[in-house]
Amino acid sequence: MLMEEIMKFKRTEVFLFLFGNLILMGVLTLGLPPATGSPHISIISVADGTEPPPPPLPPKPAAVTTPGLIADGTEPPPPPIPKPPLAALAG
Image (cartoon, rainbow, N blue to C red):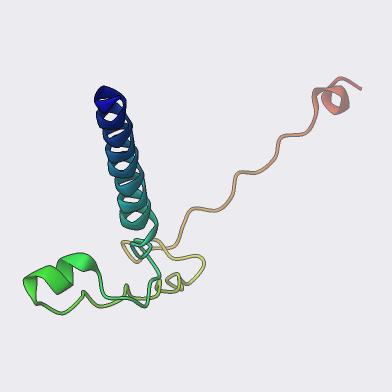
């Protein structure tokens, strides 16, 4: 009878231990803010006392180039002249 009571207590203790670990892992996994786009301060910045890094800058627009100029300042060569089809030459 005493042995059954001890085994029953140990099962409850093991269950509570595993259930507590499950809750702890859920909080640690789901409780963290996302890596990007988060308004929250990251855990690393809270731990070391520094400010969080600034948000990334928006992408720059593509550079506008003048058509017809090459990097060395000269004009590009004229486009190649298309050759007539062979059927036109034979007939």
